[in-house]
Amino acid sequence: MMIRTVWLLLLLFAAASAPPDDAALLRQQAAKFIAQGNYAQAEPLLALSLAEQEKSAGPDDLSLTVPLDALAALYRAEGRNPDAQKMYERSLGIHQKAAGAYSLDLIPDLKSLAILYAAMRKDLEAEMDYLRVISVREKAKGADDLDLAHDCGDLAGFYISRKRFAVAEPNLRRAVSIVEKNLGKLAPPLIGPLDALVGVYMKQSDFPAAEAPLRQEISIEESIYGPAHENVATYLDRLAMVYYQEKRFADAQPLYERSLPIWEATLDPDDPQLAPSLDNLAVVYAAQQKFAKAEPLYHRSLAIREKSTVQSMNNLALSLEGKDENAAAERIYQRAIPLAEHIPHLPGRANVGEVSVLTKTLRNYAALLRKLDRAADAAKLETRAAGLGKPAQQ
Image (cartoon, rainbow, N blue to C red; front, top):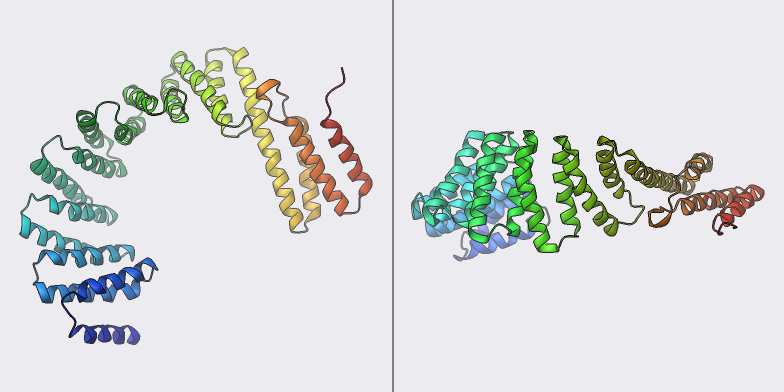
């Protein structure tokens, strides 16, 4: 405490004969400390900057909003929300006195206060400031200003965080409408509010309402990336899931049938991320009693998942070896080999390398056995591994 007091006194002494622009210099010095995460040394500099600015310009000068906002941000970073609130409120008051109650200059402080109030669970105050941002923007720029879409989205995000989905929905719809009016129905900025709108519908289990925005998102992604991009596949899967929730399996099927080839072209044949796509289509087939179509997809999914498991077991065993826990590593290899042996065999492009994962496991285990001076056992495994790589005799 004594050191901090001395530090403040030194700063005050130095500032006694400081030139008028010293406040800006103090903020620059504070910024360096903030960049280093050293808030304790930045704070007195910002406080002194505010004092210097106030002394030279007066208590209501617009220039004061700069150090006030800087101090507020610092207090937020330190978790001192009540102190930050005082700074933002004073900055807002200065802007309002200078420019009026409906100036666009008020919006940054109003938004900062809304976020701060929400963090402090002062929900009424947060909501009122979000609503005031919209009111200020409307009066200054009109009801169709593109920035209003962001303001409506911010308010909707607040409502969503409080699970007030019914009041979030109209704000998201308005955000979508404003963007469409300004940029068209296929504008990329629509993805954000449409995503949020779909999320609101899903939270309320209003699956029919989610269909239209999802179809619009598919069209937007197709217009940007073409019909075979993974972004398109993502939204195809989301719409298919909506249909699945409604037990509209026949409608979900063509969407999954379209998305699966996109994922297959994007991912490696044995990528674990491919397994859920295989499962999705298989489940839809099975729900329609199309078991002959579902079965090979389940086999492929199982093969991918089992291969991933065996690879993880190999990695674990190698880590154990690195710690000289050789007995534990051997037990892992002994468990991994039978799993690798029973990975379903898949012909053609769908093959997920079941031979290679077994070969790798055998060779890793053999290497461990040689470290343990069990050359005869190692040789048997190496012989078997070598044989797996040879083509079958006709």
